[in-house]
Image (spheres, rainbow, N blue to C red):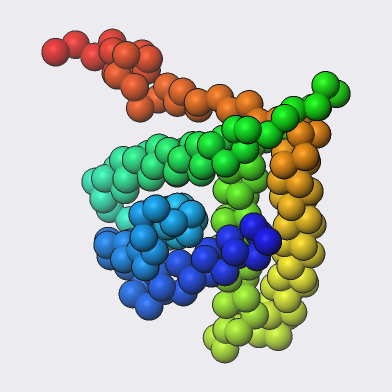
Length: 201
């Protein structure tokens, strides 16, 4: 099943990252480029690094210059995250290009890859919430509260996995069809961001 494979690879990437716990550590993708797992691993590695960027930038003692540098890295990471989603959608578009779409087929609110994106982020939420339940420097109330949140996240995992599998089944059967839009982010484009194209040289 797709979600079982994705969950395995996502957690592999998360655990590999935490061997170093360093946002500057280079990715060491264990899968060949032609494998779908390569895309999944790379996608989650990007998400994991960005998760920690977001932690670091919230340090109230962070140097403003370092924060600005980090903000630029977060922007670049957001763009890479979007690129990875589009690569994954391209995989699905190619895989199901010959499926006969039924006359009454419907479009989904999100593409398979954007659903997988949420699945990847959920893997990170579960990993880090589980870490909170194991802390020894907090009281029982903190651990108990985090355990309740972890229970909800695990329930969400089951529901989202079911929804993704049903979406894939519908696409394979022609009951739903894929229509992918490029994200067309504007803030990174010097031709579309008025702050950038309005800068006087």
